[in-house]
Picture 1 (cartoon, rainbow, N blue to C red):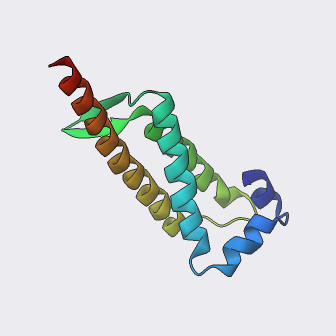
Picture 2 (cartoon, rainbow, N blue to C red; picture 1 turned 90 degrees about the horizontal axis):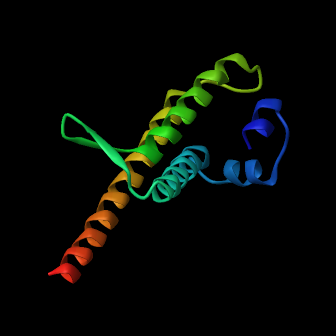
Length: 116
């Protein structure tokens, strides 16, 4: 998808996104939210804290990639650097983090209940 967008190529996905109001922003939220959620599951909920804020490794990795990809858009004539895309990415990361945290709490609660 990134290659197609960088080269200005057409895709049925791009046409679909254009047909939905705010489709591009919804696409960013879903794409990066789902990708970071999945990678966090692969990393088995591994995380770290900075000032009482929990950061999942999967989300940090995807966020780093997403921000680099967004910044590089400034250097492609067919692309535009858009702060609203970055904000949509962040919304996806936050939603993924909330869902991961809820799932993780539920899993550890069940493990603790079994061990008691």
